[in-house]
Amino acid sequence: MALLVNLALGLLFGVGLVVSGMSNPAKVLNFLDLFGSFDPSLAFVMGGAVIVAFLGFRLARMRDKPLLAPRFQLPTRRDIDARLIVGPALFGIGWGLGGFCPGPAFTALGLGAPGTLVFVPAMLVGMWAARALAERG
Amino acid sequence: MTEFTPLASLVGGMLIGLSAALLLLLEGRIAGISGIAGRLLPPWRDGLFAQRLAFIAGLVAAPFLVGAVTGVPVAQTVSADLPLMAVAGLLVGFGSVWGSGCTSGHGVCGLARLSPRSMVATAVFMGTGFLTVFVMRHAIGG
Image (cartoon, rainbow over all chains, first blue to last red; front, side, top):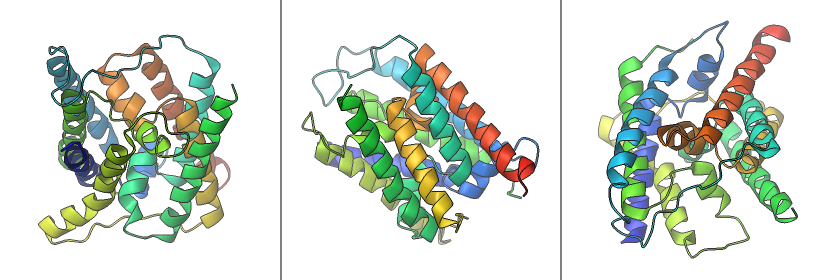
């Protein structure tokens, strides 16, 4: 049951990425190109996603626990540390170079573009390195 | 140039938000793709490997579902500069896990939770994203 739910929600999330245009790096790079071929579409993606998630989260949190799991697992940290600046800064540079963030990179995987087939393994190596470095403190 | 698609982008965004809301309601978890993908790699702490793999499998399958329903294969333009894509992938993977989130975890779920940490993270990655495209397209040629 949990597997089916996760598969279905991954599919829904991915369909959202494809329909919205977020899965197309050309569209992402044009969104980020404020002073060139600016395409503001992705602001509508963020807006639509945040509004629905905001309302949905409020409804979900009216319950004591989720429908299919024993408890909510929410981030509890409040501090702004160096990692919260350095990590997103590096992520944004990579996003601006390739036009992929993690979700769209996975939706692009099966379409098999050579750039994607290089990007996704490199991304996984980067994720592994960050986890390994964090483990060492 | 890419076409301005406010309606499709709004509807797609709402589907993303719906998926995130349902993941919290049903499973109690945050739909952050870098968190889900990063925790597929060792060390494994909780027993949720299969659930995370199923979610990622759904992402991978999505363009084929859209293609089958619309009858039009999903088109996209990906850079063929492979060394550039390798560097981009490393930075996206490292940075998103190091900063505890990406466009989905911080940008969608974090902002929807009104998290100050996610507001800072989103401002920073949007900023360096804009700056990187400016440098690549306008400062050092285009």
